[in-house]
Image (tube, rainbow, N blue to C red; front, side):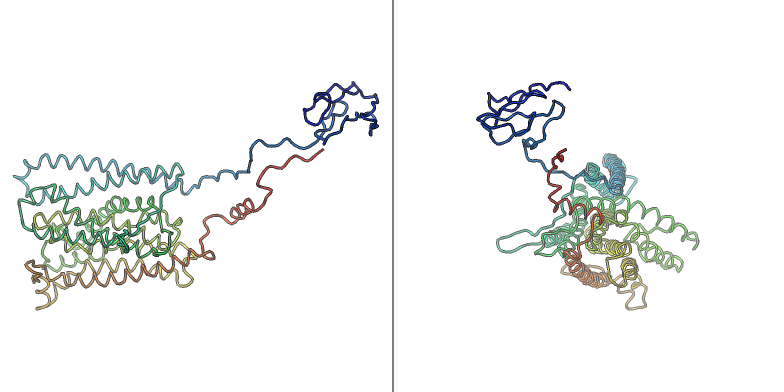
Length: 518
């Protein structure tokens, strides 16, 4: 045994300038102030003060006392959760697709620039209506590619960086003591735009001012679509509820998908199926691209027309429009969110399709714009119902009864609605006097004549609006019920949730504990 060495101690609670008395292993020391040393081989402190640290024993072990205080408060932080593989894969796919969309927008913008430059030289060989229609279509595709691609790429990169997205909010506009919903603003602007279109209707000089006409056509397709979409968002969200259904990231992806990939897939499948039907009926050279074409008289052509517009188009378009929602359907939090995102897909699809159709009208574009006023409702409502059906089919707790049948019914309604709308030309084939009246008759609204067939489309639009209001009202009630504490959807695993609750409520997790004394 080696004799113990002097051991310096802190300055608090010790005599002799803050240092304890040295002692040897076999020595005995008298205590200070007449006190005897309570333990043999241990020194006694002079002027005993509150104990700070015990003296070391034989130089081998340090005495155990209280741990040193922490210089700052420290709380235990839970480990960073692992990345969600599904969300990570979807973010990668969205980033790649958004990049492709952006590059496609650049290509369309380049083609648009070439078309505008060559327009004075091409007007000799091509009709002005055809050139103007091409300019309108490539303008819509360029905006969809560049604008939608940029917006989607931004949100996709934020998803890869695990950044949260902003809530998709469409609050009402406060005007003194009233609140003005956004759909009212868009509706009023659309009415003003139609009035301007009627004033310049048939004016070739205005139509030749390409940029102005393209702008008016773009507004003619955009404003009614925004009216329907904001109406749906306003109807689903309760006025006294701060919760909003979805996020801007998901809306951006859905809108861009409808305006790009859905259009591409629809064109491919409709072209293939159309060629198959045309070959089966032994038809040649029949085109459906012109909305102003007359109703054919040939029986085979009528059958082909009916099959393409009332069977193929509804099935294909309602199937491909909500593809973005189908990809993330498992992460959709409510039926209302699925419906709203489906509407966004349909709005994107409608903007491109309607702009192309209206551009074919040239100086009389307002005629087609009025006829296509309900196209935004048709496409957005149909895609919303299809997405709603997917939600019911894939979420076992979404409905208490008849979940499968209601899910299939939502998709069937979307296809049936589209088929009835496209098949309304059948009224023009009825015997006289009904058929000829709807085929060639007109109705004068002031000095403006409109085709009689608009009566049928107006009735169908009213019926769609009524059912649209019913569905959105039902979804608003269901989404409010789902957000109650007892029915709130579980977004995490039960075990993870239990551990998280223990971390919050168990004080032992609040700070690290000192090691036990030996």
